[in-house]
Image (cartoon, rainbow, N blue to C red; front, side, top):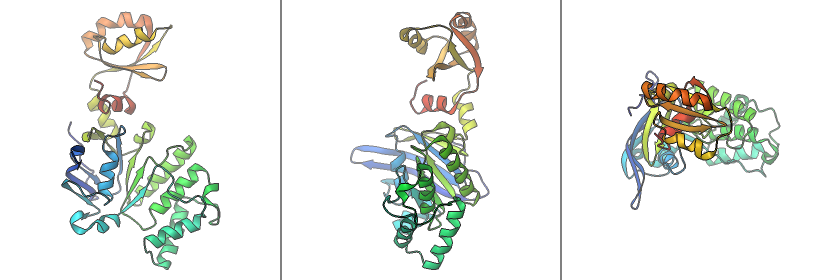
Length: 314
């Protein structure tokens, strides 16, 4: 599957060429190549064990590749690991702040690790607290903050040294829907200020907000495009939603996964999404199916794309 190129005009913030990472006989990342533009919100999706975390470790300057090359903010491993690390900020899916310290103490500690000059740190802290609309006191213990507010402060901490690229590893895991929405508004503001945001998430509604999405499977990059581009290329067939009219047994429903009319048939909540193999196969099967299901044609979702490409169900 061909990959959509990074948007032009702003330059490239991340470049990976033939990236290969092996641990002994195990290949964690298998010769992947992609680029990310400055100011882009780039989604990086895949099942657990797909190679996402290993790729991010390389891009953060934490793990030299076995083969291939990467450049982040113009810096590569030939420039020294520190050169890459200075270009990136990282926010873990787990809270990266100390709960028993205040907000100010956490930020002071990170500033000292980054060796930020006091005056520059004071200005930067004020800018970032304004960016995240932090209205609580700096003497507030982090442990007393809500999950959404903790993540916003964690993002400010990751941006404290003014990196060119910020890596967000499932940043809204365990956060309420309202908190997730507020955090993504913040991500968009960060990108509008020229930062490149490289984000992993298991929430497909969040992935929809990325400019482009890379899909990883078993160490390989299996698709890369905009959300709309992925849907169009992965599902060239018509897609339908099936809502059972009556009670159907599990065996009856499971039989449709191998039905001659479908190239794809998967549960979607209490309903099912299916792709027809051909207009002829669909026309032949439709009378029978409409006795058992309420049927309507729909646009495929990113969750459908993920299941078909990442979980390789086709």
